[in-house]
Length: 124
Image (cartoon, rainbow, N blue to C red; front, side, top):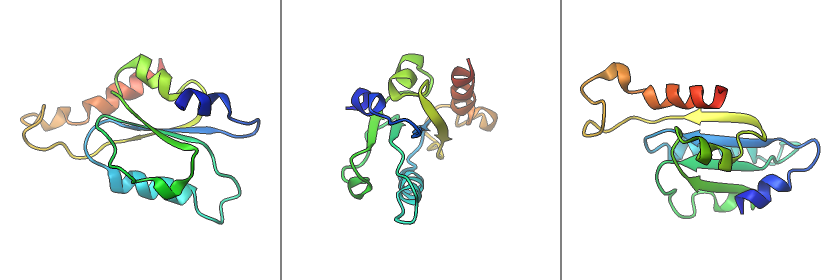
């Protein structure tokens, strides 16, 4: 489905890729997508949302058929390419809080390391 969506982006449209690095940011994703799907918006751009964990069922049911999700890592080039970062007109990177039990809990300076690595991968 994602390849089909990417292949069917019309001239003048821009694909938006949302990359979630870690954490559960479902509220932020829903709000962001909902704002871009508001009735007063002149166009509805196709979107691909890449998340490290499975998206809750029915989170984006009312957002249309041109919003798709993909589970993957923000530091894996192949997965980012599958999401469509090369064709994207906009890439949005989101991150949430890490639970204390997860990696880097002892070193706060490294908590945003996945976001930094993701930015580096996208820039290269």
